[in-house]
Image (tube, rainbow, N blue to C red; front, side, top):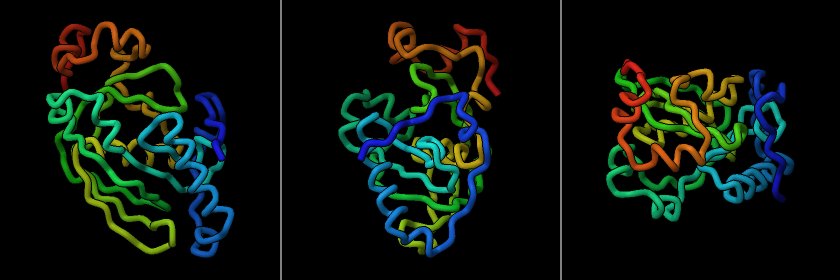
Length: 198
């Protein structure tokens, strides 16, 4: 079942989500929620969706960057973003550790902030300790675009949005982004907009 994605301004997006216990994770309700979130994310379309985005303040997110998503992106951009396909999976009660001290800067959007995008600095590589959809512990080490997706979704579970981290001068509508900035390098865009690199 497709779920409604709540938009910025809804209080659920600004409160820390609660952790879930093993019994709750394997319950029929949570397993159904995971399936519904997967359908909702794919339909949007998006590469991640956190439970607060569908109105539930629990520490659960689904992630998937399908091969078909990559077909629309130029090879140069895929290399620049270090972007590869990521199989569908669930993260529950995640704890994130930044591995790389050098930030990566790219445009980021959010299904809960419809129609806008901005450059957001993020750690290039991260380690995430979490539980999977069966309640088993797992460790994810990720870099590039996958690391960005993990950080974005884990921010949602802490009540943060990308606008809290963005370079404010780069905030733009998607139509304007496609008109002026799509296909240009991040350094070129920052220079045009007068954004100092970190």
